[in-house]
Length: 78
Image (tube, rainbow, N blue to C red; front, side):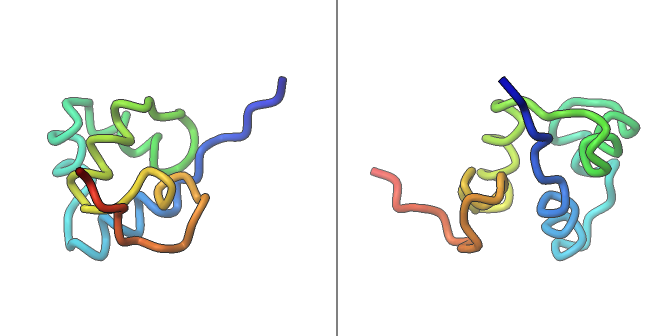
């Protein structure tokens, strides 16, 4: 089974649009700044837990973060 790296461009672009630094998001995720840098550059894969935290923080969907949709608006939550 082949695993493609998760798209990293979207987490970078969301961070830049929010005018945040990598260290800010690293603190949110409780990781070292260099670990977060590696997420953004595609060197490290991020976990589902990381994706959930980012989706909630940026108010978007997991589908958007992983490139399954171009719609940033999250699905309605019950």
